[in-house]
Amino acid sequence: MDDPTTFIEDAIEEISEQVGDRRVLIALSGGVDSSVTAELTHRAIGDRLTPVYVDTGLMRKDETAQISDTFDHMDDLRIVEAQDAFVDALAGVTDPEEKRMVIGEQFIRTFEEVAREVDAEVLAQGTIYPDRIESEGNIKSHHNVGGLPDVVDFEDIVEPVRELYKDEVRQVARSLGLEELISERMPFPGPGLAVRVVGEVTREKLHVAREATHIVEEELEEHEPWQAFAAVLAKGTGVKGDNRVHGWIVSVRSVESRDGMTARAQELDWGTLQRIQSRITGQLDDVARVVYDVTHKPPATIEYE
Image 1 (cartoon, rainbow, N blue to C red):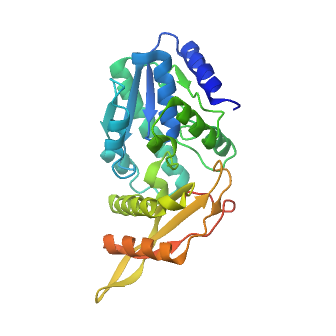
Image 2 (spheres, helix red, strand yellow):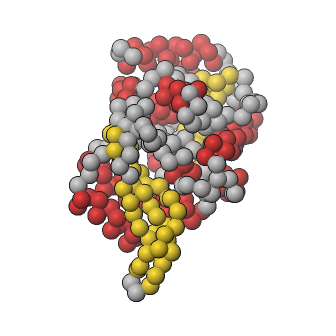
Image 3 (cartoon, rainbow, N blue to C red):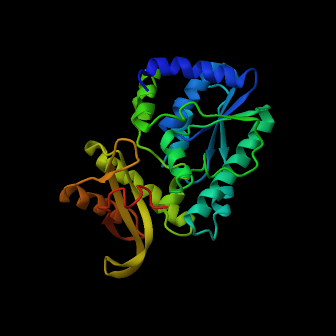
């Protein structure tokens, strides 16, 4: 992308031509990719856009409130409460690819239901270039690419940022005038916290991953990582007070990257790491220990599953 202003003009024209006089549903996640897609589509077709945010129970802390505040200028914003449906569908699922497929299926069926209510025939998604490369390259399926079911009840799918890298999407966000909370926000995986829980997804593990990630994001904000979060690995033995506990092992991950295709583990000072572990183990009773992931990408991926 040479110039974000030119890209915006071309994208709006492309969306308008592709959509015609049809209604569009946009899948909002709160991240920069879907936010830019929503803004571009809204400028192209106005009130024929219905933004839909699905509260899957797999999202960041306070995400629903943030979505409501950010997109309240779009009159037809729909917030769908679907935590039980998603978490129940993931019960007993331990394979990472199967998790992604289950989540993709749940997402698309939820969007289809809303689409029938508003007579929307087109789905808009914030798919970016690395999403397509990783899905096509068999690294992992993204719920909005390889995680889609074979049969989708939409006439068309609009993906205006499909050829952009993350840093380019941020440039577009700034040119669109989106607030910094959106344009500079750290990436968040499409399947949400489900890929930050190793093994079966449960409400208990999700709570730990959500709260621990919130702590990590707060503590590392001044270090400006490309992405930073906490993942729940397994259980291990610890001591709290005078009691032996068998609690969760939480891994902290913080990386530097340009586009997410490769990444380097961030070198953090000992004081910062100790402050993070102290807050996580102190505020979450069921966490026994905290470790720091020093692995680059490759050989590891950024997320755990």
